[in-house]
Length: 622
Image 1 (cartoon, rainbow, N blue to C red):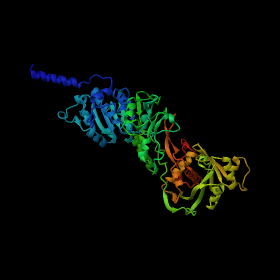
Image 2 (tube, rainbow, N blue to C red; image 1 turned 90 degrees about the horizontal axis):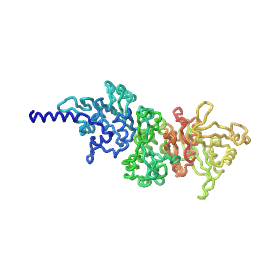
Image 3 (cartoon, rainbow, N blue to C red; image 1 turned 180 degrees about the vertical axis):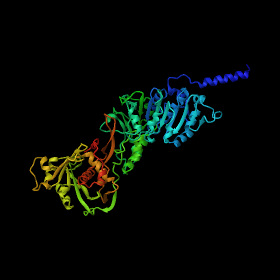
Image 4 (tube, rainbow, N blue to C red; image 1 turned 120 degrees about the vertical axis):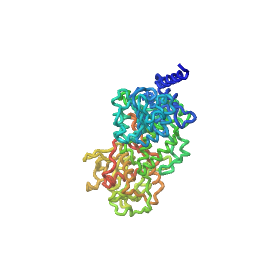
């Protein structure tokens, strides 16, 4: 045989041998680190799993077929898409049969991703190219978003077009950005794999709304959280963005906002940054030092399945951005504050996006909506006793305080009066601190508030408050941690049924006409705060605050905020009102007034008023 013929034959054998998949290495991640190059990484283009160790297990489970479905709920900038890219390269190079499909929300998204990134990844992967048809010699076998390999086909597409999920069976599938998929599309994608007994689907996405197709996929899987070991005690712990003071055993990201608040949801971040730290369940704290955080991530792992009923072949994983070592904690805090400001202005979208993209929390569109009140709108109206033109009610509220002896204070009152018209619009008429019982009574009388329209909190020194109310015809109220109370109409409300006050303390009636008797009822601490927030956020019935209010009023109205608390038993987050400033007296009085407005049937848009939330909890400090 001629030398040239022998050389040609050797080339054919060599090419054929290189096209045959090599035996498995035992680790898909190690294979990817040797063969997958990522565009834009000039210094070290090879995939390096030490940078994103939280995608190692999802890659192993999906690439090797150890799981039939793998769902990764990850924050933005967490390298989640790399997991899908690696798996596709592995499947093409290592498997001899079974079509591969790479699905994105829209064709334009898939095409853009193909041009800018994924085609480059495929062409840089030698084992893939060893099996690939020549684009020059096999016209039509390699086109935009599609490659026809000798033993399998690869398609990269958007799923918005219905027929893109029809036709042939698929063995391997990566589904990206499922939070943006049209409803029902995921089930249709799954349908492409049902005829293949050894199929595998990898879902990669941020979180989305509760009850969505993505949420169902995550819930039906093992539901495992990324954990890191505490540097002090060594116990593994899922890092969380939110620190619950009532449940410190959960740990969380912390900072001290005292002295940093600038008002209206803004902060001095130069001062706040120095206080940022992570507190582990054992109490150990750690500052935001990249090297330390990377060391923890390198030792991280996914915890045991939280969904005990899930098959181990249906894996689902999640982690929060606070655990990503190259994402600064200050960045997360700024994003959260920005989202909260939008929420307070009535726009929930940034808040939902923050929960989904940073905390990887599946949000409830009914609960995670504007319930934080907007910044108080200050009108050019002067504070006069004449009050609101066309008012139908003038409501007064009083709160007795014991005073702080160490600061030279004696027992005193805080008082507030607000007018309301038929539409639910209202105007603040009076607010301030009142030193004596006599002054409290006189202020209500001088402003023309009917005794039956005055409520007095009896949370402190109840016996004295009850006597005060009976003497002057005022109603006594008391806070409860209950979310709501049963009424005869079958509806649970944020206030209990009224009872004559004298029957509560077993004394004789104080009025000849029973209709004039002072009443007593309980109120939901969380519920009245929700109602005030609802009223202040109303677009149709202004909650008016005139010029000339005291600094106390403006300070007190910023004293509480809605924060997320994680249930230690279920791990679920619920919203709770938390006092963040020392004094909240006038804010609480406005809450009492909001309750009375609802009791009087003057709540604007009553048919759309927020219902009693059974999971609501009282705020931390009364």
